[in-house]
Amino acid sequence: MSQTQGGAAMQGFFYPRTASGLSSLLPTPPWFYSGDLLTVEYRTDPERVAALLPEPLSPAAEDPGAVALIWADWQSCGADRAELLDPVRSQYKEAFVVVRCSFEDRTYSRCAFIWVDKDFAMLRGIHQGYPKKLGSIHMTRSHPLTEGAPALAAGGRFGATLAAADRRLAQAVITLREPSSSNGFVNGHPMAHHRWLPSIDGVGDAHVELIESGGALASIGATFAADVDELSLFESPTEELAALPVREVIGGYYRQIGVVWNGGRTLWKG
Image (cartoon, rainbow, N blue to C red):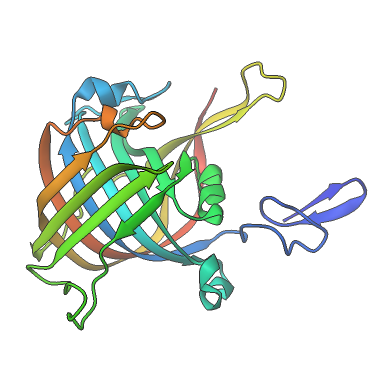
């Protein structure tokens, strides 16, 4: 992607754009992901979820208080796969909160909060409409040699933690129970996200749109249903995850997945 600025042709998909494009933090899509996901689904007060849905969204018709808290350990790259041989540019972790909503009588998933630990993942989220912030995310890793790791098999126990601004926000422990064809239902729809750009003069927004996006292609690996041994949320002066309190645990899952992301479409402009 190029853009002329001050007479010079600027290259790069996103910031910063330069004459060479070498400094751009992100490659041009499609983007490729392989990762492990630890999911805990629970129910909270439906009005708490509704309060997170800006116009033109409304609560999901069924189970409007359902929430998925997901930890993910990702490796990602552009089409030339160059990042895979420079792992600091490909490996990152994230934790995110997904709820469901409705737009024009269709159910969507929506990421309400999300924390990542790398700058490229954060900027990528801005493009995709994910409200990403920096955080500290850790997950137990599986390994076929189990001296120092759980096996990806029934009985394997996995923990996950999330912190931001030096404060722990969430922690979970699950025990794998049996293979599963499902990874839950909350994060099972196309995503409906807002992309907002505040006006430079401080008056309103210069750009507002609701977009739909999802994986252009997906490969599903080992998937397990799990018992949720612990799910704890903690208060923070700068975060609102604890404002979605756990009223009932629905279930847990662990899944390995590969995804290709290649854009979306505009649903609505404000």
